[in-house]
Image 1 (tube, rainbow, N blue to C red):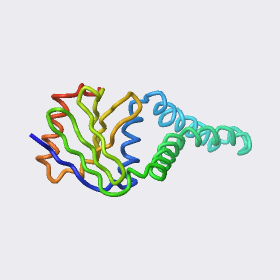
Image 2 (image 1 turned 90 degrees about the vertical axis):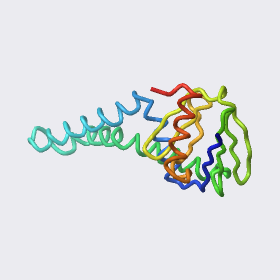
Image 3 (image 1 turned 180 degrees about the vertical axis):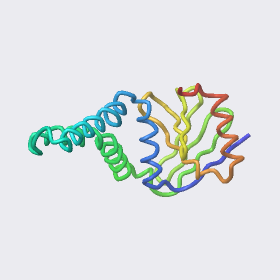
Length: 166
């Protein structure tokens, strides 16, 4: 059974794909999304309680703010760099999934990948990731599928042919 997915990438597809890829990086997320806000809240709390002057709280505000925004800033910058530098992300892209693997056809490239060449897959709210290495993945936006049935069939095919990332 062949499954088709076709569309034009948008910047948000790349951003969502990179964020989903980085969700596996628990250390980065933990530091950025837990420790950073804790430092910020602690520093602001100390200032409100009047324990020290505002100048003495600047390092805490800077470090907490940096750690809190770091994850979002880095994912946005990485997505922007990939979007601008990869000409294959512009124009219509088509995925053709079948029992042997998938073919990817873009405006400037064409490739064929056997399922044995995909290490794992991961599903997010808006995209699928098909990993050809631990840090490199094909981003397949769910909106590329013509209907929910095609997307469900692709999900089932991925589950049968690829080990799913936990």
